Length: 254
Image (cartoon, rainbow, N blue to C red):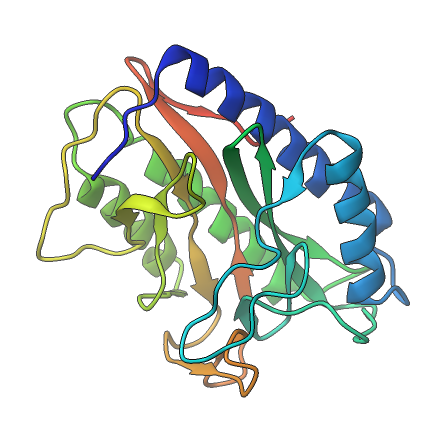
């Protein structure tokens, strides 16, 4: 079931989105070589709590018998695609780190991700990050009433593949609201099913996940973290958007 958001619900989602955007900016300001992903996670969670929200990801139920997610953020480094668990890992110059943040404010969630550079990174990493972000914006150009979800998906896939990269097909974007994950699913590639028709008031978390190499993935033993099968770099870019008569309004950007 797809929940169309009311004016009041959209205002609460905007507030949640603003907190997520601020949390990501706080993360960016504190990313330096030598910081552990655990320390960075604590900094972000303190920001979320200070602003009257709670971390959406902490305690999320896992699949295949995984533990409940034990941290505020997903922090995925280099070949880690999504769901990296913050811990003792220390960021090094040249790393890239994808940080996915969710915040719940007065019962409504915001969700966004960015891939950040640690110091000076390779030209390949720079290009991967740039194209991943570009693919998101190509996708939301299609997030207008009357189009279908597959129009968003196809635009993302075209942008990624024309630049020689691969989209992840095992995980998708999603609806969002009082639940972190709601209908509809928003794939980053064309499917045989064109998807539901886009309506004003839909709230979507659109999130291209892009590999430098092949699309194949491996799930690590912690049953959360997903990595590239070929060891290539991966990047992630996500925003929560509300569909309006004029297109998609991004809620998770400052």
